[in-house]
Amino acid sequence: MHITKLRGAVCAAAILAMAPALAGAQELRIGVGSEASAADPHFHNIGTNNQLRRGIFEALIDTDEQQALRPLLAESWEAVDDTTWQFNLRDDVTFTDGSSFDAWDVIYTICRIPNVPESPSPFTTYTKAAIGFEVPDPHTLLVKTAEPYPLLPTEFATWGIISAKANGVNGEEIEFTPEDCGDIEYPTTQAFNDGSAAIGTGPFKLEAFRRGDSVTVVRNDDYWGEPAPWERVTYLPLTSDGPRVAALLAGDVDLIETPALQDLERLQNTDGIEVIEGISNRVIYIHLDSDRDETPMVTGTDENPLKDQRVREALSLAIDRQAIVDRIMQGVAVPAGELLPAGMFGAHAEGDYPAPTVDLERAQALLEEAGYGDGFGITLATPNDRYMNDAQVAQAVAQMWSRLGLETQVDASTATTFFSRRNNLEFSAYLAGWGSGTGEMSSPIKALTATYLPERGYGGANGGRYSNPELDDLLTRALATVDDAEREQMLREASEMAMEDVGVIPLHFEVTPWAMKSSIRYEPRVDQYTLPYHIHPAD
Image 1 (cartoon, one colour):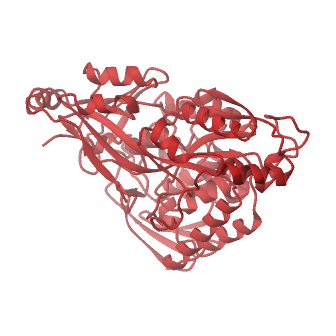
Image 2: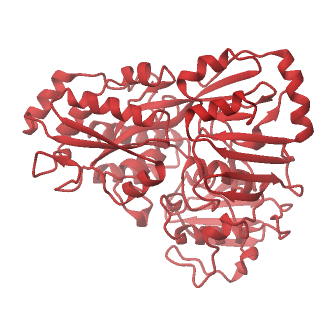
Image 3: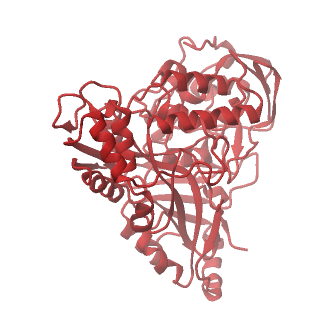
């Protein structure tokens, strides 16, 4: 599978001209395609927030460019019995307020995660497995689970740790239960945004969070690990493609995320600019309201046709994924047959589960069989500033659906508005994306196709409220299976079940481009994160 590809013209003179300036200023300016909604590390489980979080608030475990686990605040971990994981924590780590890091900070963080008000997408799906803790000493943490849970270390790599002591809490007094940790003070999201609670262990410290303007972090000179390569990093929200590319060409920023696809060739042929690309684990998909008897954005019928698997399959078969990849995405994507790219844990091998091919005749027959041969009206909602060409992809899908005789419309809005409306279940059909935070199949299956069960951490992003108890049972058994080969096969079966029932319609996997001055270097990541502590001046 194609993972990394480097492209672009490199001009030696440009490197010599730019490198001294970067080395002297030690400042990195990043033009981001979508800005973080908060500096709070637990407010919103979304890529833009997560990449900012990782430089300030570290997790117990880190992940490399391919999402393989590696030590971070935990030096090592192991399953000491079927329901106990032991994490051996570093003893040389301090928070930026000077307080020492210990096991109680981990417990305090897990207590806070379900208590973040108005969280659009909480991290509880990655903490629900923990039902108890033991602290033999300040730097040894035993985590208890109700049953064998092999993904616990993977899930503990997805959220950042905050300080109990910095928030006036004596960790040893916490009485943790899965339902409640007692009367504990937690910092507010605003306290993180204004910097007063932004106390982490990472290579950077938050200097300023200015929504709509910029986010600035500065080097943490007391960092326990390798010093960050930059004294200051500024994230500039340049959500429109043209200004983002123009800022790079003008030298106003040093690196940009997701340059517009139509600008890639131009950037590749510009002296002093380099373009890199890597396939991502982010699937662009369509969710359909398969739960309600009446659904708000379907017209021409008194019932909800999307509850019928035949209708959902017809909508999937009407979509020409390859045409979308070729024409809308200009080849910078891969058609998707399931929710994770081939070769990743729990996904099928290359070629074993290909993307559905367009079949209008079969789609029309399915609609006839379901009693909707005369069609109906449907509106497809989408963000217009969150994913690569998101609104254009939605327009293309709507046009493809219209070939079935459906009356289609597109409702496009900014990501902030879109996600708020999605969480309020205002849509009958919507386009969105999901990147696997764990790098394996249980992440999208649990979030997108498992029944919405907040108490179990299931269905957190299942805005279509698809439900299949058989799938839920298979997922639950997979998450309790320690044997990797057996668990992977169960996840593949769960994926097949969700795809055959059309619980969600996968469209394509994004191939992520970055463009940057040739005087810096960066390794593409499957999680699509732009991590400034991994961006370095070119050798």
